[in-house]
Image 1 (cartoon, rainbow, N blue to C red):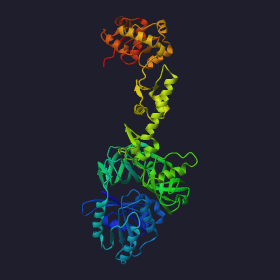
Image 2 (image 1 turned 60 degrees about the vertical axis):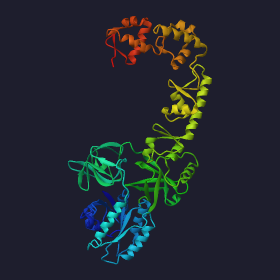
Image 3 (image 1 turned 90 degrees about the vertical axis):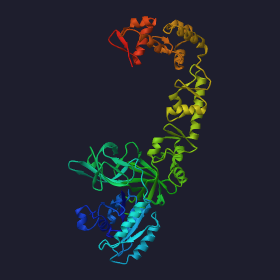
Length: 587
C-alpha cells in the first residue's frame, strides 16, 4: 500500500478529486457536508491500474484548519498538490506549499482541477514553477475535471508512476505510528488510526503508548481486518486497556523500549531563529505542541517541550505562531539528546558545534561528544550503531571515543599507582572503585581501559603490571600457614599463631583481597580451596549428617567446623534439615 496526502487552497476540489478517484466520501462530519467545507482529515482508498493500493489523507484547505492540515501532511511520504484552473494560485496554496517544503517532501504530483471551467494551462505553468522552487522540484502535472471525468485516467497513470518512485520502507524497522484520531467501537474498545511510516504491526504485539505497555487486539487496513500491517499503510489499531481520551491526536504508538522520548531538541531552522518568538507551536507527525525556543548560533536553536516525544535526528518539523495561523519556518532535528547548557556562552558554543556539520550528526560525532554511548542508545536516537569509524572503539554494547579511552587509561593508571604507593598491603583497586576514580561509565569497560593502560585485572581488582600479592614483612608468615593448610586443609591456626606470623586484621584482610586466604567468623582462616575440599568429604557421608559427623570427616575441631558449615549453607551447597542435621544439596 501507499499513502498520499492532498494539499491546496480551500475549495479547489481536493475532496471532490479524492471522491472521483475512490468512490469514497472523505468528508466524515455532518458539518462538512452542510458547509461544503473540509474541516478535519478525511480518508479514502482505491486500487490503481497496476494493482497497487493507494490511500489518500484528504486535508482541509481553509486557513482556520491549518493545524489539521499539518497533521495529515506530516506523516505522509508524498503529496498530491491541487490547484483549481479557474482560480489559479491562492493564499493557502502558498501556505500549503511552504509546509510541504518545510517538511522536505520530495515526491509529489501537481493536479489542476476544474479544467472544464477554465483553460488549465496557465495554472499548470504557474503552479509548476512554484513547486519547482521547493523540495518537490519539478513534478509531473495533470489537468482533470472531476465533474466530467476528463483526465482521470491520465491521473491514475501518474499516480501509478508516483507510487513506483517512492522508497521502500524497512518492514523490520521500529514502529512509530502518529495517531490522527481515536474512537471507541462497541464490543471492541478503543481504536486509533494513523499512517504507518516504517516497521510492521501485528495482532498480539505489545506496543508502548504514553509510557504504558499495551497489547494490539486487532488491526484493519483499507477497511479489512489484518493479522499484520507493514509500512507504508493507513492502519486502524484496536488497543486493549486504554480509553480514547488517553490517546489523542499526536500520541505515538511505539515499539517498546526502542525510542528515546525527549523534552529537549536542537534544531536547524530555515530562517534566522533570533527573529522567531520565544514560544512557538511545533508540528511534527500529527503532534502540535507549544515549545520554548532559544537561539543558539547561526541557524540553530534549542526547543524545550512540555512533555516527552519520541523524536530522532533527521525528523522534520514546522514552527508556527502559538495560537495563530501564520506558518513560520521549517526545522530539522539535529539532536534529540543534546547536552545541557549550564554556563555562560554554552548556547553559542553548542550552535557553533552544530554548524560544523552540514547535515544530521553521525555516530562518530555523537560518540566523540559524549566520550561513550551504548549502541542501544545510539539506535534509539536514530543513529546507525553498526557504522565503523577509526575514532570509535566498539566494546560489547558500548561505542567509545578513542581519545576518551586514552584519557580513562591515563586516569586509571594514575589512580592505581597512587594506591600502590599509599597502601603497600593493598596495592590494587577493586574494579568498581577503579571505574569511579577514572570516570569510566561502566565497570564492564574497566578490563579494556586497564589493558589500554598496560594494567592487569586479577580477582576483581586492578593492579600495576608485575605486582604480585605480597604482604611485605608478613609474607614469610603467610607462606608458612599456607604450606600447613596445604598439608592439613582444616587445621586452622589459632589467633596467637596468626599474630606470631605477623598476620593481624589488616594483613589478613589484605591476604583475603589477594585471594590467598578465606576468613570465616571467630578468626577461622582457611585456604580459598577449603570449602570445595570439604564438600567432597561431606558428600561421601550418609545423608543427613550432624556437625559432629562433619567434624570427624574433616578431621578438625568444632571451632572450625561450625563457621565452615554456616559458610557452606550460605553458598547453597548444604542446607539444614532440622536443628541438628544438614544435608548436601544435590545439583
